[in-house]
Length: 312
Image (cartoon, rainbow, N blue to C red; front, side, top):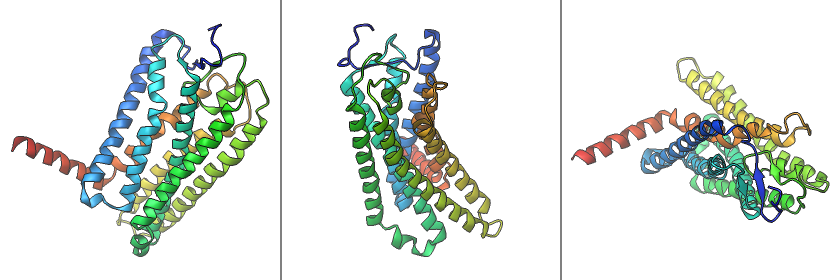
């Protein structure tokens, strides 16, 4: 490690505990990764082949599932690889690529969650105008916009981070190339970077969060006006579960990026990152899709069809 230079990259030191725990970590993260990938691929497949699910809501859900597959694939394979190595390293170029794709996908998903909340708001509060407002062209434009926002966000913060010189220790107390641990090992003042994160990141996250919160508050208000026995409890349960996932995603991300500097959590802040890098993409298929009756019926239909074709 004494000969590890800036050109070589960085040492990822999150899992510095005893090697005996690495096997447990490996199994845990492998299960999370496989379940996330399989769950989201299942949603994409079922909602693509069933003609009843060719609606704006499921179009947005397919995009969310695709984002979650890419999003988790930027970090979890790195974790699984690192758990096999005594000194897990990542090259400088790979670190740049990882941070860019992670930030792009995180910002895109944040924007898409806001778009999905708006979609549900229109569907419940303005059902007669839903088809007109959320037409195919509008959905496509919204989705492209979420990707553009993500790409711009990724470029700004990645370029801003890697313009810094890194000296001294090349050890990151993290499991991937996130912004906060990289700023800590820079040998110049990072005030400009911190202000950029606060302004650009805060504007995006706060804007999306307020749009989501406002949409669901309006939805809940409409639900309370529905007479009992007309699906009010189910709709309320769905909205609350959506809000829990959103709070988990935005809450953990905001605390990681916007909290005041502190040395108390410096060595363990990577634990917080697990929530928005791994847990939220794992919960999204369950909360947004697999609990949905339409998805369940479409999945059952496809299973019956595959069995019939196999034994016919």
